[in-house]
Length: 214
Ligand code: ADP
Ligand code: ZN
Image (cartoon, rainbow, N blue to C red; front, side):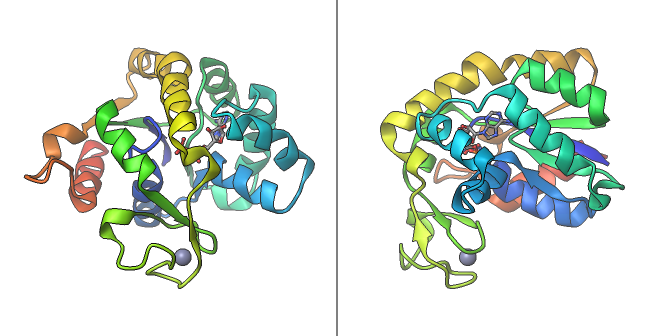
């Protein structure tokens, strides 16, 4: 199964992708995670990506496309992939169609005002890349899963968040029409899954995603 998760920053793509990739036994490939690890390893790609990421902008298409092409050529992608955070532009989507076209595209749709609350409270584990919201943590500095240090990503600062949401609407949301035209789009409307506290439960989103793929 070759799958893409599409949705704005903070939609829960990373969390859901981890569960769904394990369920489908295909690798979870997050271009954001790949860039963050390139940055911490000090590679040339990391150095180039960092200035764009810190500004809330997209890394140039050629850089991302080359990185994804190499990743998809690896043995563990023989049975498919789950791409999280790629493609983010029509040019990237066209390139992917030439490399290894997806079977289905899951759009996780969340209203902007929800996203803002989620992103400003988001913390990431430096060790296992798990993401958490401060409202659900007893200790804001320690990963409840592996004990690693929790940090706020540089691009989760309020000014950068606004920029990233705008970039999503301008550059990435055209992909919804692109994949709709190919008849591959499955829409998960997270607002319709919300409970009384106004947000949806991750396990309900997970079920809805699997149902949409049947
Ligand atoms: P989020 O989905 O929370 O915005 P990601 O971890 O997917 O975060 O990406 C973080 C940053 O990495 C993006 O804001 C962008 O600068 C860069 N990036 C990740 N994937 C891509 C991509 N496919 N094309 C261009 N830039 C990307
Ligand atoms: Zn951890």
